[in-house]
Image 1 (cartoon, rainbow, N blue to C red):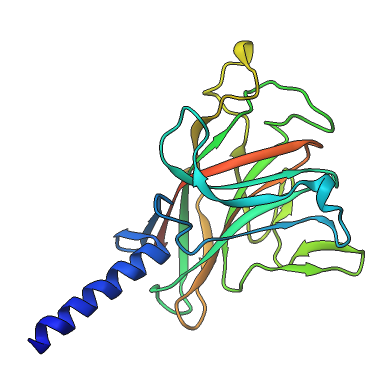
Image 2: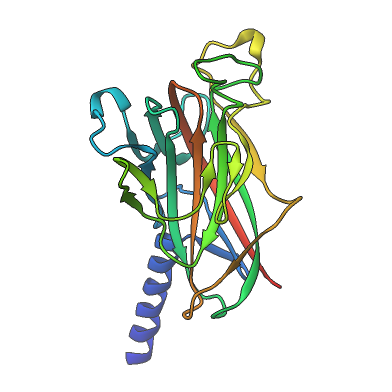
Length: 238
């Protein structure tokens, strides 16, 4: 009876771990579908004034159903880019890797946007001027108060089209699956972005952990809402 009780408790613990941290679908491959919740991912905003006006920036994030016409749930982030450089991100910590080890990282992200290719906008296109970035680092990515009066990241993410040490560009929110000729702004469609042509390298910390961060770095001076439907991350030891 005691053995059965112990086995049952272990099964419950395994289910809880999977629900909080995504599914380990192969060795060093982690998949997050967000069907049941945020699965341990946190959201945040940077590159805006410390004393920003919440009413004008319209920042929002959370978990819920995909927009009308799409099935399933997702993590969403939304904001109005009043600072000409709004960064909206989500992050999580991954463990179980080898300590102090170099890994090549492959990101594959399914996201929903409502911006077709070829749109014009204030400061830039709402599609081509909103860059989707991904990266991994051995410290927690955090928003800090800088001396210039802005909320900035404590990691090097680059700036809009330019990449940083800790994040690379996967593409933009310009969605090839939305027809510009019939565009209304209400239609969202899924698309996939990845870095198969150029893997990213990270070194784990002394406990075999890394932080993963995904986000949009915007030059479009308007409102953007993006839904993250699935994030797949594969680590390959160098």
